Image (cartoon, rainbow over all chains, first blue to last red; front, side):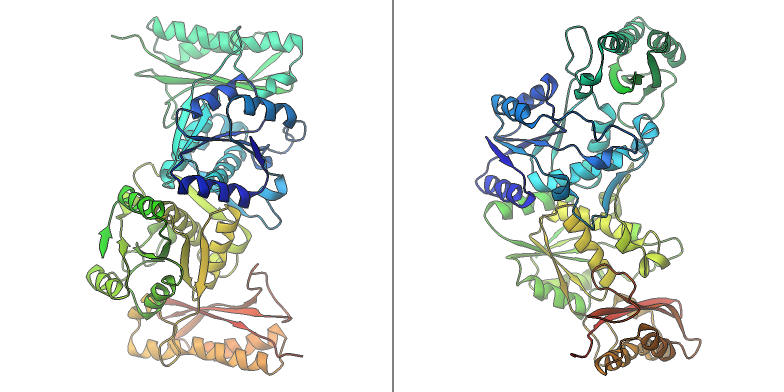
Length: 284
Length: 284
């Protein structure tokens, strides 16, 4: 497995692969890899001959006061995990390589970035779309695989790729969970034992909402009331948002008429966690 | 010569060329081709085996009340001119093909878009960078050729391509002028005989400033005073801006210390014309 730190070297490698007809699949990550990431890498093998994992803690997607500085990093461990998952190249540029002096260009998706995480973190998605556009131009993938835990991120990237005619297949992969249901996230490393237990409320709230929807409940307000109760019964968990949305446009849904995204974000201590599920109505 | 109207068809053609090692050179235009465009197409032949000219009057780069509707169009004539210049493909999509319902993504360059045309036309460059990013993803060129008449546009596209790691060589080509000095522009078609005569003041003002700089004048205020006098002695010409700027960063220059952009924009009647020259100081 090769580690590439330079943009120009990665572009040359990508061109060389494409020249001989090799398909490239990219898994963009911020590192501190967990089973969720490794699942994305296995999925990538279904879409490419050459698997590239990017590891880059992207400063432009963190707001002021967020956890850019303390975001967990462990390149040695990541390298071994990626190698074990059959990755050919880890692309791991420095911040200066990605955003040199004088940098001033951003890619912005409008409507679909506004609600949910976009409301809590107003410059977040501009950072995400900018870095993903850069990674697509650097790695030149035929396909790119993203986890559905960041559901809105995936919707935003789908929208960007379609709008800007990026010739990249954007693939979402279902959330990977711990045995007890907690969605895997590098940020779970921040949690104390008590917080880890409290964090379970997110996936349990999703389970409960799913049961209600399957049981025939279609009223958004009724479902969300139960979700909020499940999440927020004491001070360890502070709800950022709990909302029902159209899975593609992310427009608000009051009454379920088809598959509907239930999206959650909550602070557990100082740690902000997200989770989601697409709820299905009972067949009529 | 082939006319392609569909994004997917253009991408397939581009991939097929790249697969067999053909280099692609793109000349983006809004059509109503003139000698300036044809010169860009000849230049493109130095940079590619396959020459693609895009013809698309891009609505997102026109502001409210600007001339999007009345911008001159003549596809039959353009087609013949392009064919005569050795172009292999004209890419001529519809507005709906480029901006389908739900479109919501924009590419924005910050500092370098703010002065000059960016000040007079606040959403203009966002439209330009967005459509050029799309065209690069659709035509997949190795090189793209732009005229230096739109000097700021070229600086903005250089910046975008570098910042977003677009693997495209961005090439500027010197302004092509009518015999009497008027910079070629599709918008010259709007001018009446009297306006056409008055429009000459732009290139004459540039000539005069160039003589001053070569004669040893380095004070921006002194040069610009003469330029304004040359341009604006009566009501037929209304100056939009006349400024000295660094040719790369477009930062304002008070005292010339090296090659310096003199950029002009003026309304002649309702028609807004631009022109520019990079002034050189006398060797010391």
